[in-house]
Length: 134
Image (cartoon, rainbow, N blue to C red; front, side, top):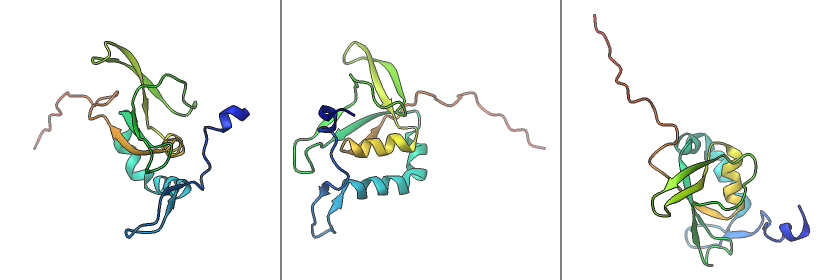
């Protein structure tokens, strides 16, 4: 990582949520640990579904933005899929969350909300199963 790249990565101890009546302050490290703990339950529901992120790189009270198209190469462990965008009238690259490393990377880039498509890039077979009873 070069010096200029390092500036865009915020440390894990950065405060993501300030202390409130609802509970103690939560850091990015706390959030990543939570995602790791719930990943066995969360990842099966995200598998093979393009993801839209709501990112807050400046913290909870700063400007947020949606990100669904990727114009840069994510880390090698983050899978992507190229799909036609009806809105943009062109192919776009979308990210998938198929593994724990991707989920933790989302925490690192200040994503607080995962919006998985209802459709999958690997849909199940629609062939009906016929059961024979005796």
